[in-house]
Image (cartoon, rainbow, N blue to C red; front, side, top):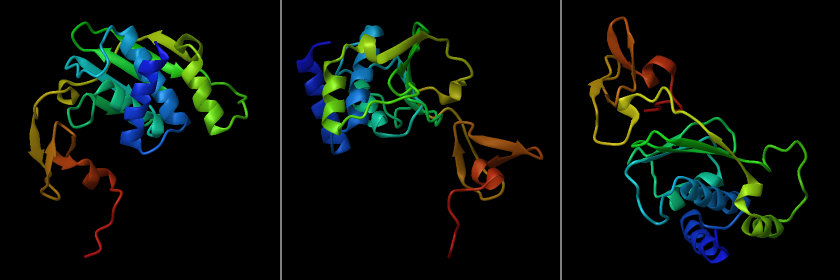
Amino acid sequence: MDLKTYDEQLEKVKEFHGEICGGTAIGTKLAMYGMELMGMELNTRHKNLMVFIELDRCMSDAIQVVTKCNMGKRALKQMYYGRFAVTFYNMDTEEAIRISDADANKQTCQKETKEELVKRFRETPAEELFNVQKVKIVGIPESQKPGPLHKSTFCSVCGEKVADDQHLVIGGKPVCKGCALGTYYEIIE
């Protein structure tokens, strides 16, 4: 992975994210490394690639920009585990690798300025920054994979359309997760 390519990718991430920070710097490097290990070209959308992000912080913007995977195409999955890790999955070959940030998993951390951190991420070989594990993707239903709308139904409580089997069945009737489990909002009018 050459520094010129890293700098170019980081600049694209900066344009999307709004700044360069530790998360975008490490996320750019991680995404580039993942694409390299999967044998996939940068700056190309790969219809057979799904990416699972375990953290919803700055790093995730870098992963999205570099891999060209996004939530709208259902190729980017947010897992909300709070861990500094990303899994790259080739749906055609079923090959999957999970890459985690070795720094984030250390019990002690270095005291660095943002600039020092970004410089270290830029200059340190990816093999020294990340842990790589071969994994098998399990439990992803067909309705959660990329492609057109698989199936939809209407909530028997609120009447809203629920896409891609994201409903529960309660008393034999479809109920959206909002009605069944509660929502993040409260209707005031």
